[in-house]
Every structure is written in structure tokens, then in C-alpha cells.
Length: 192
Image (cartoon, rainbow, N blue to C red; front, top):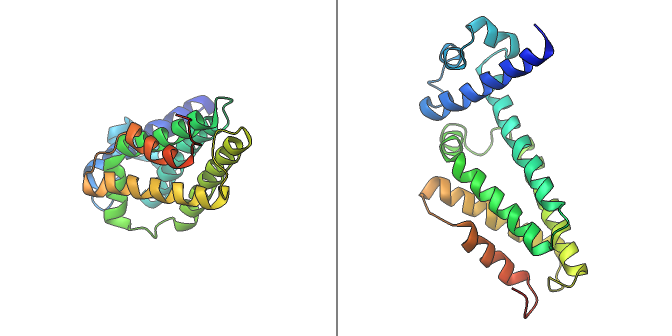
């Protein structure tokens, strides 16, 4: 097997796992069902993942790496800080809406403790990206002076709360409303 087909097979397995876990839940999903959904043999799946838990953790890590990469690009743009922050927040919310069923499954079956250290690191990195955007906005005169670190904690906390509300309570929050809420607190008078 060449490297390219191995990478493609792994991607197919992870995509199939996302579908099966979202539909069946972690407890009911089986490696056999995931193999069938991926179009590979059960042995083919076990070449890449020793068991269901390893596959599940890999799926979570892939999802977090994918959104982190997109968020880093949004934070690192040369556009005004308000536009970068708006794009960052929108990506987070759209990701939550897109993966709502998986988020619900994860909370329902594993609670908040599963993979806690990985999640803490992910959210800490996201908070640092928000802080960098805020600092840039302050230096460019677009945002009012504030404690960028504390403000980033508040923005990240609000964002996590909104994502949980979208997933758990079926509350609809549009990116426009969320961005207006966050940016109205940061923008200096006369900026919009």
C-alpha cells in the first residue's frame, strides 16, 4: 500500500466514523459498521486503529486540528482586527452548527471530562488567538483600550457558552448577532 492510498483510507474511515458515531452514538457504534460505511474491510480499519476508542479520539483530534487551522488563518489575516475577529467567531459558530449532532453525542455519552487535557489545550490556543487579534485592534486604534487577556477569556467563555446553547438547547444564534454582541463591546466610539 502506498502512502497516498493509506492517507485516503484513513480519511475515509474517519469520515465514516463521524457519520456512524453521530447516528448511532459511541456505545452502539461498532468497528464493523464503520468499516462497512467506509467501504473497507474490518481488517483494513484495524490496520489504522486498534479499537473504537482510538478511532474516536483520532476523530476528535482531527476535528479540532481542522477547525484550529481555519481559526489560525482567520486570526492571522491582514484585514482589520474587527474583521479578523468576526471571521474567527463566525467560523467557530458555523463549525458548531455543522457538527451539532457529534457535539451532542460527545456530551451525552462522555460528558466534559473525556479528552479534557486536549480540549483545554485547544481552547487555550483559541483564547491566545483572540487575544492577539484584540491586541492588534488596540494598537491599530480600532478597539478601545482594555486588558486583552481578560477580554479574550470573556470572549472565549461567551463563545463556548453559545456553542453549548446551540448544541444542547437548540438555540439559534446567527454569526451576525454574535459578532455584533462581541464587537460592540470592543469597538471604539464611532467605529462600526
